[in-house]
Image (tube, rainbow, N blue to C red; front, side):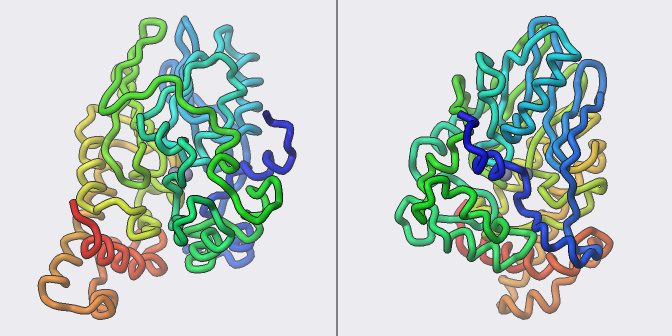
Length: 354
Ligand SMILES: [Zn+2]
Ligand SMILES: [Zn+2]
């Protein structure tokens, strides 16, 4: 199923980060690379990286548990590394969520049990799935149209949408329209799903899966290793723009990905309630629990400021001009994304019911 070279190019993980933005590097320009790497986190837990995209794997006596295959090319590379280093195969693959730039490639680990939140299966049922950024079914035809990719891509270069030419890469048959099954052709559906929480024991080691609620996606899984006190989650708390410093403004695409801001906050607080020392997420460095308290605080402060502006009858423009969120002035993307975050919060609060 990986015979298409076009498809393999498609899954090179460039989501949210534009190659052409490298031409003008400044503090607000995303920078990325594609180096593959494996590093130990603690004990039998390892981070495997494809540039700025990270997976986590746990080696037990009965098999390796992997969270996020990322893409077929990377999964192939990782399988080779794991086969050379360890004498047990990957027996379980967990999806952090269904998005194509993290969940593709599990077929490489043939026979492994795929585990995901129940909404991952719903997002693979043939209907227009939850997409990252602001890529939504604007014309309601159930298919991905070129315009539906180009609109967010052009509105927020390097932040939302994809990159110029991406649509042609996903349109494998070149007919000008992409049904969901075409985009998801390298994503295996889950074998096991759960609703709220699930405990997985492999080789006597315990792994907890938690659906924190909706935020960046509607089918998120937080993977918690209680003995190691490590958390893995992707595109939430540390989103795709985060690198070595957690202090980075959210990308705030599509009025916060269609999720009420209160639910974002509640879902982040569900992670904060876990007893962990290290957050080893799908993007960004390895962060302490103290650092991981900051993303929810930003959202609480953003929500409070915009709620106050609404209560005082301010227009959106007045809020964008006056809500400075000064305590976040040294965060990455502050100049570029502060107004966007205010607009997203305003649209979110006025549009969505919680
Ligand atoms: Zn995502
Ligand atoms: Zn991501």
